[in-house]
Each structure stands twice: as C-alpha cells, then as structure tokens.
Length: 102
Image (tube, rainbow, N blue to C red):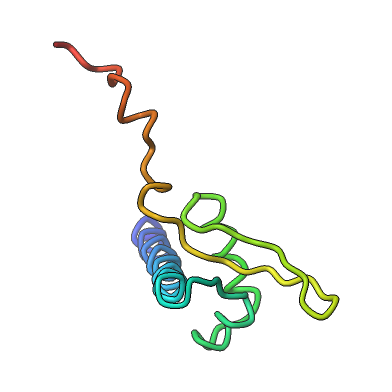
C-alpha cells in the first residue's frame, strides 16, 4: 500500500514540475522574458512555498535558468526555460557509452 502511495506522490510531483515548466517555457518563447515566483503563484493559484519548492527542483535539475535584476531598488528573480541546445548533454553524446562493444 505504501508503494502505491509513493508512486502517486511521485507522479503528482512530476506533473506539478512539468506544469510549471510548460508555463515558464511558453512565456519565454512568447515574451522572451522570465516569470517571477509571484507571477507563477497568480497564474497557478498555488501558494508561494509550493511554487518556490518546484522552482528549486527545476533549477537543480537544470531545466530552467534564473536571472537577478534590480527594479526600483528591489531584487527581482526571473525564471526562464532553457533552449533545447542547452538541455542536451553534448559531452555524453560525443563519447562512447561504457557498454559499447563494437
């Protein structure tokens, strides 16, 4: 029973991350600018902590970029999606895999 509950939680967490990523990606392609956590909380109607949690996971996994700027003397963090070229691990593609037997 616990295994099923864990699978459900992992699936929901993945769906939430991808939902945030899709919103950030659409905005990046459309407006060429990033979104703040505040913007995402308003779009998704989620709490600030929930959005921040998933943003940290996406940053750690390398799916999005963050940029810092100052607006009216206040720090502003914007998050934007990476291009496909940035997401591909070129080093791994150029080298032979460990189990390459030819």
